[in-house]
Length: 164
Length: 389
Image (cartoon, rainbow over all chains, first blue to last red; front, top):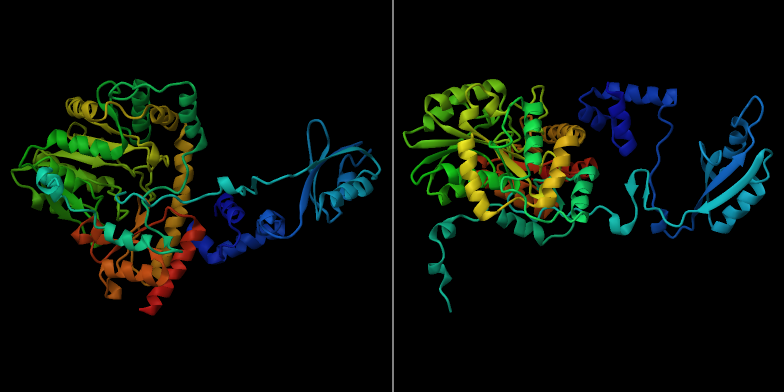
């Protein structure tokens, strides 16, 4: 089976049923089910979640990108510190970066001050963290490949031409 | 009060309005309609192509171009045709850049048809060939293609309609609205008849890039002996999701392209300049975009064909364009009744098949230029509709 295509389809729209996936890929349903199970087991597929535009809800929510400069540990390098950082449920993602800093950490909380407190109390104090720089997200124009910002959202303007 | 009715051109007045209109009037007055009716891509023009258009404006490239279009663009079109369909055209004299494929069709028919000449038009097909032929004083002769032949044109059907007045055959494949394609062997059979009766061929290959079956698209001019008899029409609207740019072209014998250019230069002068810049980029670096979009359409095509068949609306597997053309005869309704009741009851818009010729009666055109999510919802609603009947 075209693995890349199955994964791409799921990445775009995880709620497709195995039957629908099978038809679209020209495969048997049971083969799709098997492949998905295998990807899940192998850790290729790590989970399924909805892409939510929290700005459209009443729920208070703030996000920040934190740049961490850390001193790598003997033997473990960045892994140990990354491990400590990612254990916090407030932390949404942790990336090891090339360039001016080492770890890029996205943190979510109810308010910006919650996040500021979390950074100063929890992240900055970890052994080996040399410095932090907190950048608050003001608005999300695009996330997970989908456009969020109102003015740019997809509007279907087709259908005015009567002879296409 | 001026009596316009008696002042205007009688032939234009006589042209029948598109059969789709009545149906769209209903659709327009309703909310929450989920449409499977449009005939243009849901993709936006790929960004690198749009950028070239924008950049041409920023640089102030706002003059006319040569009547035939930029030579650079014609050269890229020539490369594209050779690369994809192994047909060779001289950019200097055998290619004309037009305002969409539609202009090329209009120019071609007007350049070839004398009053009384018969033009063979397979149906169901795109709605423009008949009125343009009539406006040129020609006589449209309809060939009704059949579902049992997968809506392909057979040599026999063609042969039966030929008279000593027959001038031109229109070959609208891959086909709107049926999604039918002509395989190489089908084209070869048609070519024999064309040769024997000394016909010219307008091959409308606007959907050529969207061919899904095992066999890639064959240009009619790639059949030996046919290039000198064929005016190939293609464009950027469907292949590169560029409908609004109005970019098409015709390729054919220099004598005919020369005549078409004469008409084009008086009516149009030259195709839009910024669109031509964008089109150069599309021809040079757009093959990956075509592949990507084709792959997406192909998956939706399977989904919708499977969905329709399993709810009992029989459709043959379309191998081209982005339409399916299921039969609705099992419901006992006419195409128009089916469409009207479907939209009133479940608010799904599809197009009655008879809008594309009388022989489209009993079928509906369903477009899959929509997201998977949209298609799945529409299919669910259609299934609910069938259960109500």
